[in-house]
Length: 461
Image (cartoon, rainbow, N blue to C red; front, side):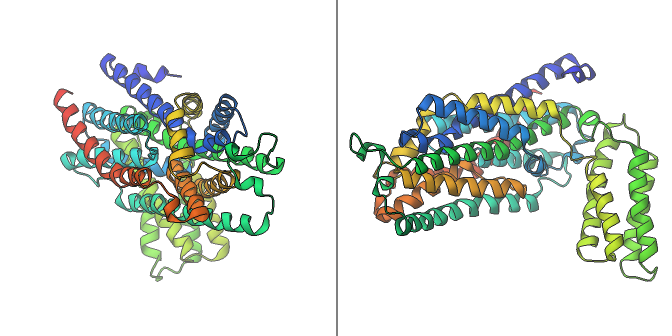
């Protein structure tokens, strides 16, 4: 699995192993930091014993990370223009990677220690942007992808608000439709021989499973994206392009797109010249491509991304007739596969770390979710509503390749159910304040920390 280390010097190989281990540590912390999001409801309603709940959640986190796609991972990688790292010394790349990893680990561990539900997604994104900004402020280049950062930021901002509102709506719906009062009580409030309906317990187990799976699917992909940043920083000729990348096949795809342009667009068309020129430039670059040259590998990755984006716009804006658009769309996908690809061993490694992490260290955040967000303990109806909102939000976000915070989505869902039951006064102000402060501070603090660590590490690199 690590045979590629032979391409590096001894010191670089050691540092690569350290960085890979740091990614594994971060993902394990992500697992136990966010485990409460899935298991708090089933534990506090005594639907499942804690040990079984945590093991069950760990298994589904593993499966979610292992079986999910790579759209979120690619989105994370796009926050840093990796192609601009071609002409900088390896020690500078290493300093940036270490700055990102150390920042993410410190902030996640710190918030976990103080029992504050905090977003691992915010943490990772802030660190990526901060490390990338510091790196490119010295070496030039495009810098962090602020457009992508805005998209990610909007998904992180809107998803908790959506979860909060949806949870309130679900609770009112349950109050209107369900007459069995037992589901609106906590496990401690039920009489000794009274048990909640089996259907609500089944829903709680199902939603716990779904949140665990989608957490693995979303957060696991973030770990894969972070791991790929490390691999591309150290070994771009091996990991910037797919292992089966073939210049001849790539050129053939470009030529088929070019043929479609020549056949369907008049030469005096407003769009003909720029699209034809893009094809010609891409073909010329492929003709001179050297897979052993780091700069060329990263340059052709960047060019393919730009070329695909241009062609996608052409298809979307209907510059092509329908038949030609189908040809172009198929070839765009072929080209995309050359730089957006699965590294199976990396996904397996992240899946194991996330699943293992889920099974340890979960109690601190569980207590906060179950007891300290609201002034009353979590009821069966509240647990089911909050988890259902979280599962739906995270699942949809993963499908569209948007990273969201499992922690914030579920915490806001729990808060929404508390408001539905007793109004705003039913929330614990201190806990909500701490969560809100962490929510607001995570991005700027991790940004600054990662930038500072980069400048520190490069002094000793």
